[in-house]
Amino acid sequence: MLELAGRIEANLVSLVPPGSAILIGLSGGVDSVVLLYLLSQLSPRYSWVLSALHVHHGISPNADHWADFCAGLCKKLGIPIRIVRVDITPLRALGLEAAARKLRNEVFARQHGEFVALAHHADDQVETLLLQLLRGSGVKGACAMPELSAVLAAGYQLVRPLLSITRQEILACARENNLQWIEDESNADDSYPRNFLRHQLLPLLSEKFPAYRDTMVRSTQHFAEASALLDDLARLDAQDVFAGETAGVLGRDFILTVARLQVLALSRRKNLLRYYLDQQGAPMPQTVQLDDMLKQLCGARQDAMLCIRFAKGWQVRRYQGGIYVLRDFVAFDRHFVWLWRGEKSLNWPALAVILTFTSSVGEGMSLSSLQDEPVTVRFRQGGEVIRPFLHGPNRTLKNLFQEYGVPPWQRDRFPLLYCGEVLVCVPGIVIAANYQANKFEAGILVNF
Image (cartoon, rainbow, N blue to C red):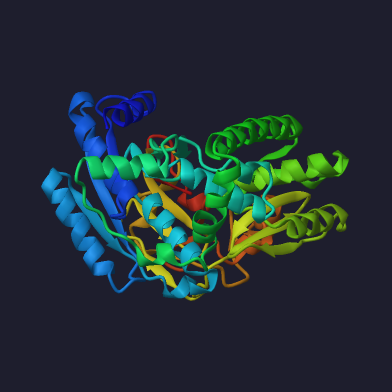
């Protein structure tokens, strides 16, 4: 126990600063119970603030018992716990294991804090590597799981302190300390690929190659180094070839150009496109899908507006020589009208953006000009015009969208601000001349 605790302590101290908040993923199985126990022993020494999270999938008839067990264990150790229930029904087509993993990842992605600790260990690492290879994964997939990784969207770091510890060592620690844990009955079902590897293949492998865990974990490290080099190459290939910041609503995104892909050798095309998809947070397409995607993107006419769907809920589009990676659009009611009452922000699901309203002086819309009529946010209906300059002509919304490079699939989803029945602001593009704030006048800026 002391040796195991020392190894985990050495791992964590190098990854997690003193005083950090650590959220522990607690399933109730022996791995997560040992991790919870060891962290509870180490936390006073490093002032770590511990809490736990249990995801209640509802798959097993014993799921309620597991949640109660986790709550009782945390109460005994004085560690706060959250129990989050999820509905796996809509994702059953993915298979129970994949659906449960996806829902768990989504729950953890919604958490806020500094570190999330998961109980993956050396045997999990080996199983993950084999499953990835059997699926035909590339170098990035064969990296398996890192000890520390950033979850940028959620703002926390994912830490796996047990990655160098074997399942047998974890079981020995649990028994030595008289720990209690739950057994998921599905772990005995060899119809699941991971269980088949665990119960059938790996024991045979161990007879011929006793050190297979160490050597295969070392292979994942080699793959990780190779993956990092491929990412470096992609960044070199991407230098000076992004189209720059896009105009209009996607002002924070960078768009890869088709022209750059076309001049690269095929292997580097694939590498750059994979890198770009990964940077956009998209799942990696299968090899056949990626090849077809490249063929369509690089072979289409100059004015082509392609839409290529891949994975579940993702699409790649080509517009004006740029490549856009997007989630599938949600349905919206084009007759929806939202009344602005001074709120600081508005969630606009049609474009998956947050519309912000920021007070200003001498810029943006004049607050005084908005007082006489209700201010509303609406969708485009067709035929809209706006006058950007006092002595200039009216401009059609259609022409403004074209001029500012707003992609066609965004145009009908774009939020438009009205004062009464007058179009006064197209966020990020134009404010009507009569509604622009004068110097030293209180104004309001509307942005994404």
